[in-house]
Amino acid sequence: MLSLAALAFLLSMVLTLVVRRVLRRRARRYPLDAPQRFHVGQVPRVGGLGVLAGWLLALAALPLLQWADLAGNIDSDRIHLWKWAAMLLPAVAGGVVEDLTQRLPARWRLLLTLSSGLLAWVLLGVAVPRLDFAWLDGWWRAWPALGVALAVLAVAGLPHAFNIIDGYNGLAGVMAIVVCLALAHVAQQVGDRELASLAVALAAATGGFLVWNYPRGLIFAGDAGAYVWGLLIAVISLLLVQRHPIVSPWFPLLLLIYPVWETLFSMYRKWVRGDSPGMADALHLHQLIYRRVVRSVLDEDEARNMLKRNNRTAPYLWGFIALSVVPALLFWRFSGVLLGFCVLFAVSYVAAYLALVRFKVPRVFRSSRM
Image 1 (cartoon, rainbow, N blue to C red):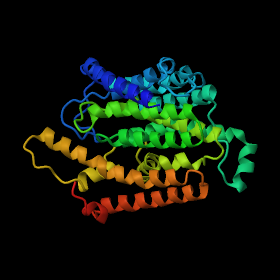
Image 2 (cartoon, helix red, strand yellow):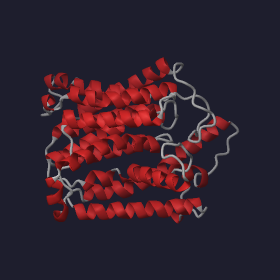
Image 3 (cartoon, rainbow, N blue to C red):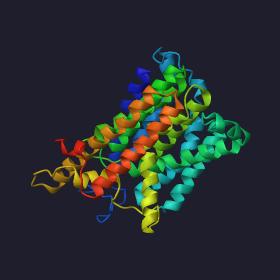
Image 4 (cartoon, rainbow, N blue to C red):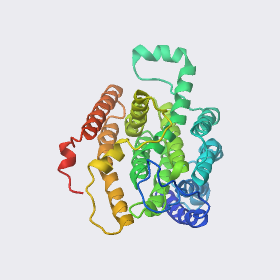
């Protein structure tokens, strides 16, 4: 599996650079007045293509790695890579169009991710088979369509959740790596080397992208990158729970509670203000941290100043991510404990958000000197 990871990393690193060079002049310039813009200059938003290409090509090379006795006992025939590629196609194609033109309406992007969610059910059979609570599971099994609907909704929604947190160099990319490695660890624990290889290859391909994204900010993942991360992580998580009853269905939720709760909370606060949930704004948690926590950098060059502040934002959130990933890895079999940590994270998020809005920076942030 190390050989697969190394190949995915190298392919992604090289292909991301190639995509940056080839499409740099074709991408439409990002509006200077966009509320989510926190960089100077024109940076291409096509890094997702490099991640996808590195992941796909590395997995396609599995038979060659097996022939060279470098792939261990991974059964490449069980992966059905063409089904994964077909599932990704609608949403990622829409993401690429948006990254190159910035003219694809939000409703069309949502429809395309929903199409990928339906394909995940048709081609890969994803569903949520249980909730691990006796008083609910009997009723849940009596209505299997509910499990399918929840799975399709999760697959369609997680790409947009990753897109929301993809605001600063290294934030969404590191989130994807940490989650993929956690999924791979649990998959190995239950003996599912195929799902583990899918997750490890995605983590490695994301690492190749981060070579150019953090800390230099030479390329962004864009919508396509967020959709690749969201779709693949959602489907791997659902299949892991489906195939192995020992894995709690609340394990992937706690792993991903940061982007999921960020999305739900953002929809709520926009609804309270009477705004459309699809309207972009600059009031997400990572944006508040950038404005009210990260210290200014003394540099005469404006671009370098903003880049340094941009790079100092993500580490604050990396610590926040650990608050969910660590207990998820420790208690991946225990639904009650996992659900409790989900609630604790949501409460902690709201408390931190309100403190930042009211200019009362939490002590943990005040004492940091990043």
